[in-house]
Length: 89
Image 1 (cartoon, rainbow, N blue to C red):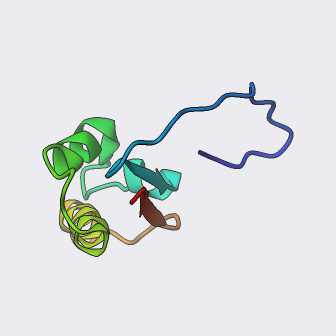
Image 2: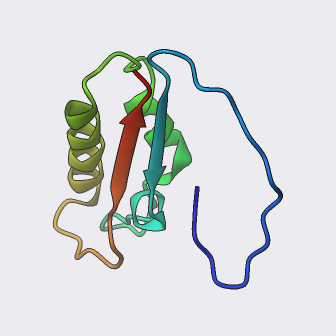
């Protein structure tokens, strides 16, 4: 899920089942850098979210945000960090 100027995306659909969760985040999550210029990346994102399918959404978003902040430490934030989640009930 994303918004890019002048980008073309194919149409698609999926059927959500009870309890399915969808997350959206800005590139400021995966591109958050630490003092050594390493990026948070998709592997860390996946590790934080893995096994948390039934975690309340507020806690899930808070955990991801805390993981990004912990990873970056005192390094100044260079981009927005936006995280959203929804769950089909």
